[in-house]
Image (cartoon, rainbow, N blue to C red):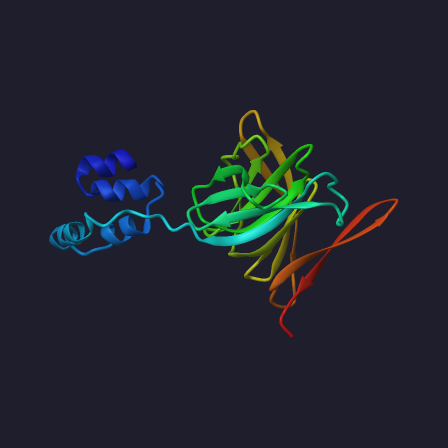
Length: 221
């Protein structure tokens, strides 16, 4: 389809960039949204001497355990997501980035599973309602989990991801990760329609000999 559009002349070069999902700066997005070529030329002339600065705002934040996955009192490290799609894992002193990953879309929520000393993975919900999986080694799976509706919130426990959607559904996925093919087969295992709007999910963990995990579902009253 992309080749057909480009050969027919119905797609400009900047439209081709958007079509293939290339990340653009705010300045570039403003440029391509201008109405015609003359206005674009004026825009470029006015800004060509202005130094280009990428403002990397923090848009979401989470934590990951340092050593013990199941101990809520264990030492933790911060995980930060930014407007430009970067995910940073900070060191224990919060003074520098220990790891850095880049996603094709802006993250809005991060859930971590595992621990820094052994192995971990990050599940990241992006602004276009996709849930990506990032391994400790930096591999980003190319087959993210998608939903039938806008995702309000999600949680992860071991290989299970539960998702709350705008149309009041509470869905569960079995996370079967294949790091050799970099795919993430999120197989839906259940779907429950709730009687009212879901606003946020909260994990509720009790440890009695073994971990017992449940989810609190909050709604407007």
